[in-house]
Image (tube, rainbow, N blue to C red):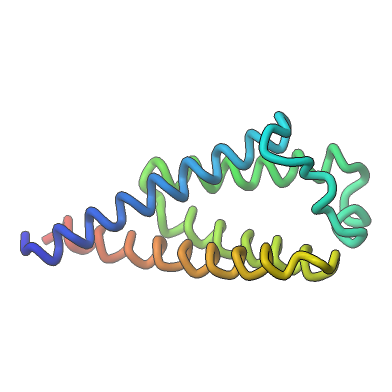
Length: 130
């Protein structure tokens, strides 16, 4: 294995751990509410899709937890792509709410990072086959 290939694997593992644990914690926190009051981030459109705020936050929690677990167990292509799409949907929701331009920008950055993670997963998989 070349030094460059080793660096790619290290970077992949770092992103995998950061995204995996972050998504897992964010998902669990939808029930705990330790980081923030998540209900304030639900747009009227989001609430019209699901019956209640609790149902909406439960759906959000499940999506984030599943993506986090997939990433942590090494399924970074599917988990990273789910996370990327999810971050874009969160950004869209925040745009609908208005007043959260800083969070929208962060969601776009997170989405790009999740796409990079998914792509690195494919590269690492091919490196390990060599």
